[in-house]
Length: 253
Ligand code: SAH
Image (cartoon, rainbow, N blue to C red; front, top):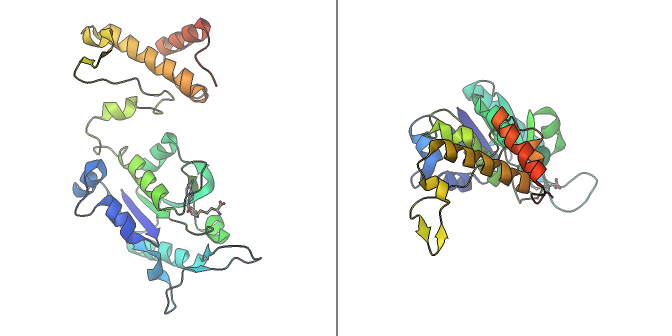
């Protein structure tokens, strides 16, 4: 799978991905050839001597807007080099929310181009005629699309088969099925009078499994009840959810 990221701060992204210095899961995936991340400087797709990528907004108002042409040229150059992309993602606070489900959808694709906006945003013709997807990483405004691009690469990369060693952990995790993850503990069993729940030390796999399901559902009910509407629960989980709902208020907000 290939990501092509188009940005006016290519070094920023390269540093974050850590070509020589990087650590962690994404870096290892790149080293093992499971993932290619190519960073493109938007200024390389300008025609003028000053390599200008922005201009004043039509109709007036503060700030600058990223010009359409360099972004179109960047996508065309990447397409010429690699073939047609499976998706052209425009990072955009007005876009569809980037969720685990969205990450899963992108993880099934071959070639993804990510366009990083800056300043007041991007000439709307890019959104209307170049991007196939507009994605927002949350309801806040950042100074540019570079952090969203990295967020998207990170979340998608770990869903590419082989990138995360233990596939079970990917399937069990928060949001995978509409439930938050259960709490995890590691040694020591007692730390400053704070003890690991007894059941996890019991060695009783059935009890542990039920406790974990219950915890996951309890947490979801308390923190993110909205997730439960779309969760895919099995019979056992559904029964536990019904019971918890019957037992009363779990801090629903
Ligand atoms: N004026 C715009 C905000 C521009 S922010 C508005 O009000 O909608 C500049 C750039 O940062 C955007 O073009 C986008 O690429 C990126 N960006 C900022 N916040 C983002 C978010 N929550 N998700 C994805 N991209 C974001």
